[in-house]
Length: 640
Image 1: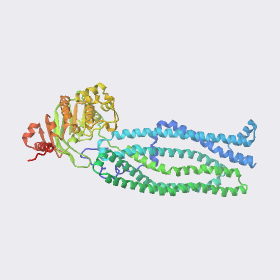
Image 2: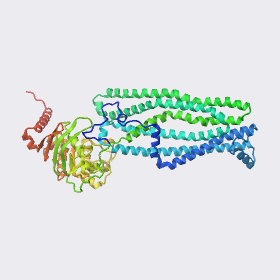
Image 3: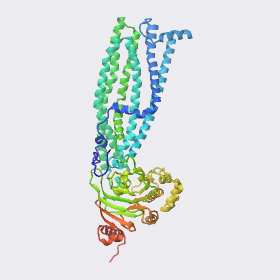
């Protein structure tokens, strides 16, 4: 299991746009056969559908074999040529047609047409039932696989997404799963063709074993062509899937930040990067097309060569009276069954081999065994959690980067209001992410109510800690849905939280109040309203520990003043940690913790720190002077 805390080196890095972490960190690829075999786990719940599909396939194959037997052995040899040989099998078709002709009082040729039509209808009907059951089974199995894959990526820790682009994960859940349906459909179609092939070969051997043996070199030749094509095209399809993943990743990043792209005039640079990846994809696709252009004609023409062989060799046997014309006609019809699976494989090669690459990428993501450490017997947090937080010589770094937190020691008392300040990159947000247990930390370095955080289930911690991030997210649904988030929060609880935070007014001013449906990412709300909704969401949970990470950055000063007054009420008797760049907003904190380069440099209240003339005073006065300069720059210029 991969760790995410400071003293552990990681094997993957998000330093290059051309490297796929799944390609360089998972290890060796699985074989095509092992990947297909592994899919049985998701297909097992629908085994009865698959068994029924196989039954339909066998019935369809039986009907498919009986159709040419009726044509060749009964019609050609028996009715037309009057050269019926009892030493060659007809599988009871002559007796069936003779009985039907007597029963209906009609000619045998008409009875043969009726029987042949019956077998054709059964062949088509059972074939349709086979394909329908197989398609339903594949659809249900892949739906379960997509669900499990989504559940897996949701469980992956934050350290994983620090390295891996979201677009890469999206490609595996969407495009690769879709390609996998082509794999199952292609393999199923091939299985449906293999069953009549086995039946046809057994009949051909019983009719003329020598002629059947003479056709075997064609099969070995085609098998060799398939192996060579698979060896050559496999790596190409891997490159195609990788470049497609990078295209989706680049598209996702640019469209999600389209305003920044357009404001900074980055369109040309983004287009250049996208075009470069697109060119890599085009080159790989061109190689695949060239390989398929050579492969497909070879596979398609083999069956015609086999027909020519049958006509040449079988025609000589007919002229020498060692076999019947019906037997040769039967061989010609069975040659289609003999080589159709190969032709199907040629037709499906592109889809199947592309899907094989997608299947491998899906399972390598599913096998990505990275998770937070969870103790076998976690210590439960007490019901009456006091919210004491203690840092003991904490050291932490992200992946292979430099240390973010160094030798950090701090005790936060129950109900204390702590503010953490410092320059950008000093480690303020990192401390809050560690308290929320998004990362593993060294044991005996972080405690909640005296319990080592590494001995607590992370899910239990997040139920008791409420965080309002600077980068918040709104989900599709109503205002109430975004407050409750699927938890046991009633509408009255949501109204009470909104009233406490003073957001009830703006919510009720919406067209449908709490039932107002939010547009994509809450675009029908202002930035400040979205931030206020994030406040309400956390307060409704009534957490014992409250963390505000630049939570008022998107709120105008008037609304922030109201929020500050509300926070004074909600933080009373509740442990709270506030991170803010605007130092004037944290003057009332019980204590202010000053960080610089991941180290604690000062602790005290506002008055104490200002009297020390230290780092905090420098930060405060720099911000104060900057604010005065910005305000005075807006004053009208006077003439002297």
